[in-house]
Length: 282
Length: 228
Image (cartoon, rainbow over all chains, first blue to last red; front, side, top):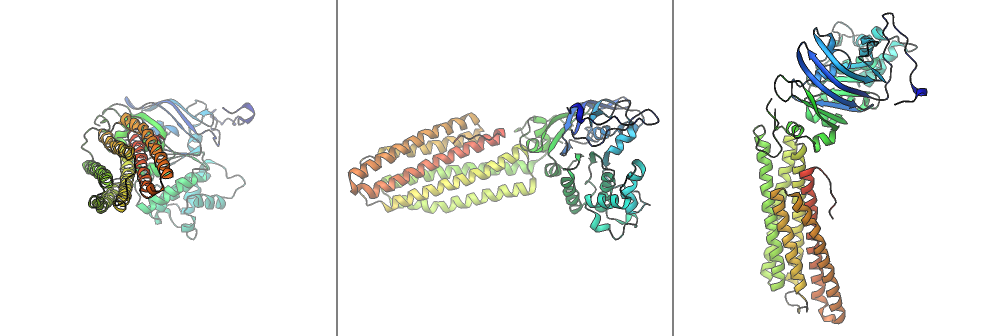
């Protein structure tokens, strides 16, 4: 725990009485006793997991085991589904993102997300896509939007490919470029945490390698949590891996094992993890 | 979803990978048996002063090298096509290392056979019995590690590795015995020198058995243990 002298100053309350979540966590993310439901359907049960700061944490497991739901609980996107409910704590920057005083919108701007399929704003230009989060969520301060756009596109390793056509529509880009544009859009607001839900599943191998390279590059600046069905991808990009599964149909997903990626794929401690990563069950 | 299947039980989701792993495992067993025969024949040829037996060991090494190459190719193929993880990866890693250790053991046998073939006309040294005991000990180590490999028996692997100290001790005894004999009677030096080298090769075979024991334990447990 940080001592008192290093704790951030209290954030200014917003008009609705909530406060923005503190920026720039140095502690990573800690999920505590998290449970999630869709209506009466219990989909995630009792997950405790710590994703260390400035490291890539992969979540693996069979379809329907609650990986994506867990990810969407982290930035409070799960609750926007009608009937969806979350219990437990998600500690980030020394605060619980589910604290009643916390503004969910600020959580989502502080925790970036990249989805399975590239989803740029189709009618907007490459440039506008890159900075839209900054326009919507944060003031640009003293920095100019052009600088933010260039910086974000560079971090997403897209700048060289688009610098001469920034005003072209985002949909003029290839799928892999669009996904990197979405990553640029996510990092433009300088989130502390980046969530990626199968970011390469719709991409060809070259585009996949570029995204993976990018994930490794940005890991020293961001804490990254990535859901992937591609086990080799998990071994390539992540430092830590969590294996989730459901024991039988209808039961909630649970975290079976969490550890260093080399350990999870090299010598897993749990028989269920071994069976899954070796393809013995599926 | 089906219940997780404990590691090592029959599986249905990955028949190609399992068949390939089983085939390599069988090849390792065969290679080990060939090395056992090579040790036995190399020492036999030496003791019997039989150049034909020694030559058969030297010529037989071609087949052992070829078998080693096939196992390495098969391991590479599995890694390339199946991207094995966890126990499968540890097994493949172990197979590859074991095949290399066995191939080097066979090379030691060739060295012994070459020495044997070159010394058929040299006079005997007074104490040849300790060398026979060392050879038997080395053969036993190879035979036992094969049994431990087939049974995936880590306890036996540790026990075999511990017994390597007896091989080392016998080697040191032989070394000083032959040095003493050479010091006392210089005419014994040509054959005694050759036998010191033979003893050294047998001792190295023992060390390679220890390396295999370490590989076996790593494959079974995922833990690196220094047994040497």
